[in-house]
Image (cartoon, helix red, strand yellow):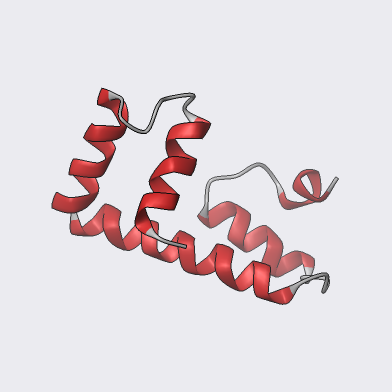
Length: 80
């Protein structure tokens, strides 16, 4: 997935147009902040790997750890 596609998805989640000021600030920040750029890259890689698994069951401890790392709700609730 390209950076532009990721930015579009982030902006869509924020209900913002890709050309909005919010998305411009996100784009600029990601270009200037190595930490956030690495975080985005790690999330992108994780999502890609999850998609590569297809319909395989991910063990709950791994799912829970990933959910914690991404600051998501508990893994059991996410699976419902």
